[in-house]
Image 1: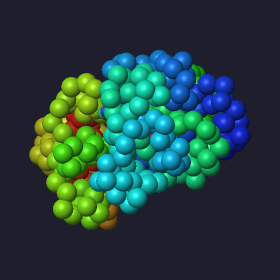
Image 2 (image 1 turned 60 degrees about the horizontal axis):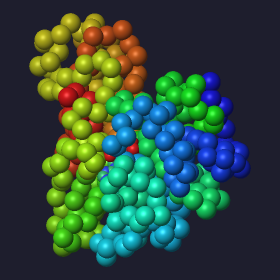
Image 3 (image 1 turned 135 degrees about the horizontal axis):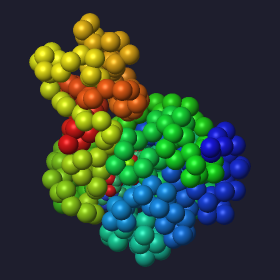
Image 4 (image 1 turned 180 degrees about the horizontal axis):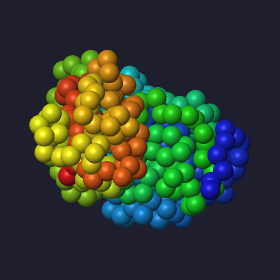
Length: 318
Ligand code: TXA
Ligand code: MG
């Protein structure tokens, strides 16, 4: 079992010796290593069992610290960075040769993020290199939002988990790139379309349709998936088709009296999408651990963080 704690100095020592450390962020826990050391980055791919075509996000506490690795910052990107960093937004920027190609899987853009978590920010402040960090889960599975989640799957493969408690946003960052002055969204996450529109109202925003490497394998149709089958639809109708004893339920607000209580996860009784995002991954994991046959889920309203929640549910069911 991995050791966990809040020792930033110990985490720093490990990272400076090119070993991996799991770090908390406001979105999900990340499996971090020195982005400038190709061996450390290779170990990240290996521990996650991640295909080598899938690039990594680099994390820093100040944009100035990564100027060597980024050749330019478009005006729109700078506006978004000013508004949302530190926070759950990842921006694709043109990369320089100073950053090892293994980080970006050969792409000419690098994904950059300043996360919003006090423990991780204090660690990043201490480092003179950025941290490459994908979500700390085996490739294709649900991202971890607690130390227990991390331990359950990667516990025997890592030295140290920096314990930052439960992730406050609970769903991964929104990934954007700037193209012809428009904003191309590669993954919906903790920053919503409405958040972006409030900052750059006159910039066109569109969702990337590519499903090919290396644009964003977080866009692969099947991803973020539990091992049980997930079916999305109208819960009342679906419950007419499956014996209640054999199902787990992810509902937005309502309880279904015909299903045993421990087999139901209500994302937010009050209908709060931020709370629902925070609960989503724990709920999927909890139901995945039960002796049930199938997980039935309903979509949530498709605005705010609802877009990211619906995106993850769709991929979990693909
Ligand atoms: O919230 C988050 O973003 C978390 C925390 C730890 O920061 N990280 C995370 O990383 O979710 P990961 O690797 O699990 O997902 C990052 C996504 C992947 O789908 C990857 O394909 C995409 O970002 N990505 C990374 N670099 C890219 C690039 N240069 N071009 C296109 N997509 C990229
Ligand atoms: Mg991931």
